[in-house]
Structure formats: C-alpha cells, structure tokens
Length: 245
Image (cartoon, rainbow, N blue to C red):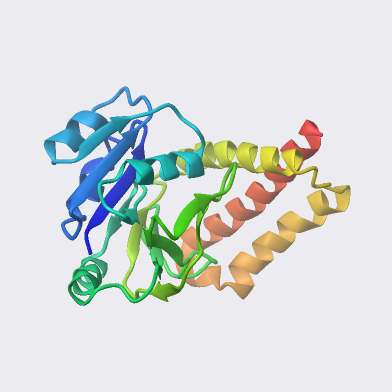
C-alpha cells in the first residue's frame, strides 16, 4: 500500500510547511498549485514535494485533478491548513503494514479556532473521508462543501486530522464572505427557493442549535463566537441567494 498525499494550494506559505512535515507516512507528496504569488511553491519544493501547476476549477475539480496526477492509487487528501496528528500518522503506518480492508477511510477532524481547540459547537468530530483508493472514490460538489464519494466500503480511523482555522475574527469574516457567496451560487444554480421566513427564522435557530444543543457554551467565548458566526453565515447565504434569483 503506497500513498500519495495531495494538497491543493494558492498562497499558503503560512501553512504549507506544517502540513507537509506531518506527512512522513506517505510515499509521495503532490502539491497542485493554482497561481501562488507567495513562497508556497518554493517552501513545498524545498521539503521534497512534487509541484504541479493548474488553473482553478473549483474545490472538487482541483482535488480530483491532484488525485489524477498522483503516482499511487491510494490518496491522502489534506488541505493546506491541516496536518496529521501523531496518532493519525501512527494509524496510517499500521494500515500500510497490515494492508487496507476498505476502499476509503474516514477520520475525525479537530479544529483550532482563535487559538483554542474546539470540541463542541457542531465542529467535532466532523468526520471526513480523506484516505481513499482513487479507483473507488472521487470528490464531488460543484461549489462548496466538497466531499469524497466512495463507491466501495468505508472504514474508520480514530485519531484526528488537525485543522488550523482562523487566527482572527477578521480572517473569519473574510472566509465567511467567500464561502457564503459560493453557497448562495449553489442554491441559485439548483433553483432552491429561499422564502422570507427562512431568512428570518433559520439564523436564530442556527445559533441556538450550535450554542445550546451542540454545547457550544462548553467552548467558552470561542464557542459563543462560532455560534454567532454560524447564524450570520446562514443569514448571508440566504440573503445572497435571494439577491441572485
């Protein structure tokens, strides 16, 4: 079982070294870069990654393109702002020794937000398929929230991917603006109606769900901010979608 780790990048010099250095269990590291103007490509190449340049074709399209360029059929797909925990790296080493029993594997993702690890607020365990046989699985999702769809059997690993999210509220707001535009475009493209009552009632319900039912209050101030931002995300997504229709 040989594995190619794939990372899609654009101006990720802040994160790329940490991601690559966590991938010692992989036999190849492939970076698919879409026009970085910072030191992303230089740093990745210095750490032994193979660099492929390609124009942007959406998140799922970019990740599928990276998998197609890989030297091995088993793909470990990582975002540039993620890294394998030591426990997950050990699990993958053991999997390589014993051989895979499934065609794809999920793993929990633990996020760090404003310097705090978030264990509630609907953010954890946030399981994702990230290790997969490209002959049996591929990325789907035209706009946002892309995911791996596996045709075969799916197993589960227990240790975490570490996700290093926003370091500031300003960064979170910029990210929220970008992703709500993509989400609104998806709603508009699929002709999903957004009634006014959804715009009024869904945002406060989103806050209550994250802060109370998903126990965001246990994540301290950061949990309160996450819950509020989730509500704001819903409001912006629906507002933009109605404006596009």
